[in-house]
Image (cartoon, rainbow, N blue to C red; front, side, top):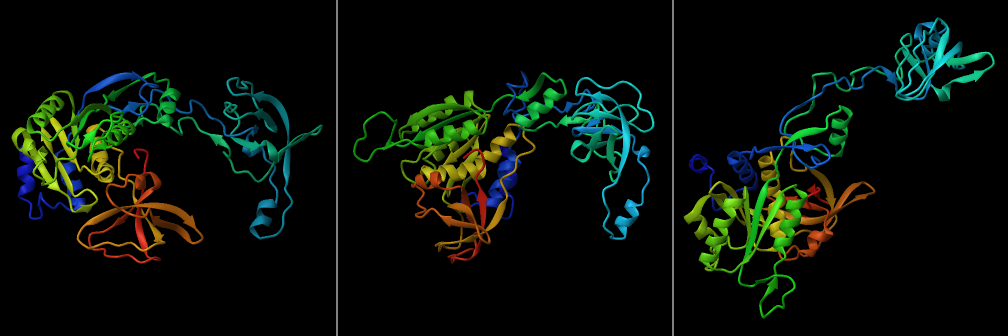
Length: 434
């Protein structure tokens, strides 16, 4: 960490007191390293965890050629040659033409037809059933008629149509689930389809968090003059749960150096990451910076963004540290824009990326001064001519209800000033952590 900070401090555009958003993301990524401790779990218990190794397919998937639908299996070469294709090429109307074959058996899923299929013969087949050895094509049942004369198959199917081939999904020895992949429901199903019962995953990231401030009270206690309930710990808890972490709530701490020093000491011995809210600005009672200078190292203190300018990133002992602002909205914005990606990296994920921005038409006027990137809360909807977005009104960093109303951020670049209705703006949709 110290070497990283020295390296970054030599960069021409490195300013720990006013870090541009993109630079902050790059610098954070540069000094992170996955925790790397693994455990082996049943695939159901592995849901929401990160694969610690490549999972190699022990079998072909599917394990045999099979039918993609209910229908009739036959040998395409047995179709009677007609002039239908030539007429179709010339653009002339052509009545559907058929070849009549004899049914010799049925192939069910799990109970294949094992007999021979001779010239001019076909087999009734169902979705997923093994293709008879002598057949290569399946006609969907809706296009086939059956009567006393036999089975009437359309002539216009291509050879191999509606047939799934052995191993077309996965072949034996192929990587079925790459290392660093978040194991979701589809991945659990994939592992089960391979007969894999257990998988190696990275252990849950342990994240200790606490709030600072004399004014903060725990819910359930009466408020005195100037006191407020600590909402940030509950927001952070929810964000960490959604991110698949093991939250360690250390509670509230008053603005006292010894209390904060004790909190850091406790957190650094039991957690991979420490997150605080409040105490990272320049007020006389903000002791987080003082304690970090004594007990750890700091990458930077401020980011050129709104809300969330006072944000500290560093390390205390072996634990990574993220000091978030005290204002409730700023906590959520900074977590979403910086901490979420950092957590994914520490979890060992290689598939995580911030949701991309998209363009939408702004429907209300937005006030902004150039100089900082702003993340305004917005509501994105589909209008007659495409996506439309409106802000949630007052964008004060203490208005937590605006986060509840919103489904996206309106992302306004550093150079942007006031934006008029009808302008195209960048929007970033919330994802599952919100």
